[in-house]
Image (cartoon, rainbow, N blue to C red; front, side):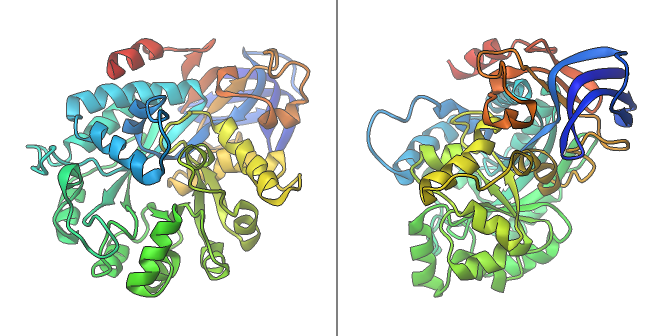
Length: 427
């Protein structure tokens, strides 16, 4: 297959008149300055976007949790209500629709942070990984890749309080119980299996080091310092910050990603300087969690990626520019991240955090993911293509190619009606 782009983001900049050749799901040649040939992709063509942190079932909460004041903790109770109602069939239906929405937004790979493992009372399904398999099948039907980040979730607080209520469906009893179930998951084309420690609130210290050894070399994600209360509880029980605790247990490895990392000390920043860090600004804003130190993390050496998390919106352009705009609010200064840095977070760094080192750039030999973004909408008309990340939204995505397959054509998913699927799943 040959595509032609008037503008394409290649080599960290905008190239003109680019011929893009694809064979067996890989780019075979990328040639700027070419004569028009092949299938035209309009607007600015970007690499596929990577959503490095998702909880698919949270999409059911969009527009339903804003009726009163509250905090992350009060929002969490509403989230638990949704978690208590899902089974493998309904979770597949919901996740398929949500991943379809991601495809329409230009996302070609998702990291699904998965802890909704068992039945509502904690009883395993006949297939102990039925819920995880539902997520994998949903991503495949939506045409996007998935890294299933299967989470350890064993306690309801830093002090080791047992799981209760709907939380019981998250738990496997202990680390060995989690490992036994986790070992039943298998990678396949378009599917990687990773692991997660939910947070220092949900995993005992005893067993962290063994977990780190068992998962060495896999993508491993962990919620970190999302709320101040988490830091305070960790300090009270363990005498250190969450980042310091995980550091002492050997959890920070080359493929470990800290998610959120909102409330960090100078010592925490030093620890995270060699890590992947996934920021989720729309969720952090929606839940009033705070503004994370994005520029300080990048300056320390952290590789930033982006996630939609609670699905308050599914729009990586919004997430990307929010990293810059939130820094402006926090510092009262402009100009912290370039467009290239933000697009790197949304593409190559996000894929790397999910274990897909061969994706995220338009270059020969890489996975053939392409996202065409209109330059003719009311948001983008007249905008310099090099600054499109500061103007475009998910609604401006017109075409998406994932692993060489066209999954979005003229703003519509090629496999199913995504709005209808969302209505079916959410009503």
